[in-house]
Image 1 (tube, protein in one colour):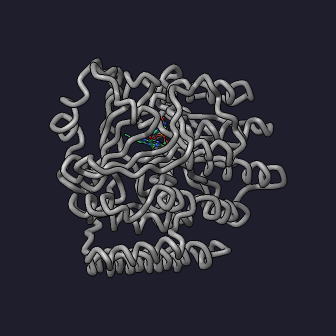
Image 2: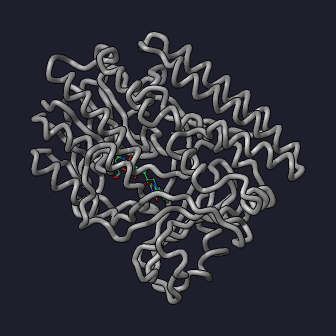
Length: 455
Ligand SMILES: Cc1cc2nc3c(=O)[nH]c(=O)nc-3n(C[C@H](O)[C@H](O)[C@H](O)COP(=O)(O)OP(=O)(O)OC[C@H]3O[C@@H](n4cnc5c(N)ncnc54)[C@H](O)[C@@H]3O)c2cc1C
C-alpha cells in the first residue's frame, strides 16, 4: 500500500513525487517509458525563470542549454517585431527529467518504468486501486491513499473516472494545438540579433490558429528548436506545414524530431475530486496564448503535492479537505490562464493583415505584453492607449472587438476569481456558468469550438 500513486513521469509527475517523497511519504511513480528515456519530450524547451523562483527551486545549471533575454514576436512579413523582456532558459529536457528523477529516487520514490496505466478500480466513491501493465508483461495492481494523474495531454487516469465527476471533464477539439518541431544543427547560424531571444513568428499561413517559433539552443546560434502549432479540430497538419514552409529555411542535421499536442485552454474546473488529483497537461495548466506549460506544470505540482502532504499527515484526503488546491492554483496561475483563454480565441480569429497592422503600429509594446503574460490583464492605461491608437488609425471595428474582448476577459476572470466555489458542492452550477460564458463569446466572434474530444 502506497501513500500516493503518481501516473506519468513528465515534469508534473516527477516534481509531485519528489515533493511528496521528500516529506517522507511512500510514493509509486508509474511511467510507460523506460527509465533512460524519462524527460524525453517533444517541446520548445523554453521556460521563464520566474517559475523556478515561484516554487523555490534553483535551476540546475547542468540542464540549461542556453539563456534568453526575452521573447521577440515578429509580424507576418517579419519586418516588424516587438520585444518582450524577461529572463528565460532553454532546458535540455532529457537532462532535466533525469535530474528530477534522480532526486525523486534519492528520496525513496519507487519507479515503475515501462508500466502503463490500463485500469482503475472504484469503491465507495473513490479509487481503490489502479492496474498497470508492464511492457511485454503482466498486470500489477497498485493501491494507495491518493492517486495523481500527471499523464499529459491525453490523460490516462481521470478519463477512466465516472463522467459525472467534474475532474473527468472532456475538452473541445479546438482546446488543443497540434504541434510539430525539430531540433536542428543549422548550416547557417541564427542572426546575431536574435540569438539571445526565443523568437515567435505570427503567421496564419504557416501556423493557422497558433504560431511558429525559432528558439536558439546555444550561444553560437548553430542549434535551433524550430516548430509550429496549428489549432486542433481542423484539417491542418503541422508536419506538412513544417515541410512546406520551414524545412528549407532551417537546413542542417536534424538532432530530434517529433510532434505533440498542447492543451491551450483554461484550467480543468477542479484539480481534485475524491482521492484523485491532476496536474500539468492532464489538468490543462498550460498558458493558452503561448502554450508554455513546463513552468505552470511545476507550479501546479508544487501546490497539489504540498497541500496533499499536509492532509496525509493528519487524515485521509477527500474532495473537501483537498479543495483548497483549486483556490491556490487559481490564485497562482489559473485566473490569469482563464482570462487568456478568451484572448486565445480572439487571436485565433485574426488574419495576417491584422497581426501585421497591430505590430507595425506598435499597438501594444513589449512591456504590456509582458504584463499580459504575467498578470493576465492589460492595465487601464494600456487599454486607453490602445483605444486612442485604434481610433486614430481608423479601425473602429477593431476597437469594438477589443472592447468586447476586454469585457469577456474581465467576466471570465471574475468568475474564476470571485465566484469560484469555496466548496465542491457548488462546482457543477459554476461549470455551467463558465460554459455559458465561453459559448456566448464564441458565438459573438463566430468561433466554432468543434466537437468534444473522444479519448
Ligand atoms: C511541440 C511542443 C512544444 C512545447 N513547447 C514548450 C515550451 O517551449 N515551453 C514550455 O514551457 N512548454 C512547452 N510545451 C508544453 C510542455 O511541454 C508541457 O506543458 C509539459 O511538458 C507538461 O508536462 P506534464 O508532466 O504534464 O506532461 P508530459 O511531459 O506529457 O508527461 C506525461 C508522462 O506521462 C506518461 N504517460 C502517459 N500515459 C501514461 C500511462 N497510461 N501510463 C503511464 N505513463 C503514462 C508519458 O509517457 C509522459 O512521460 C510544448 C509542448 C509541445 C507538444
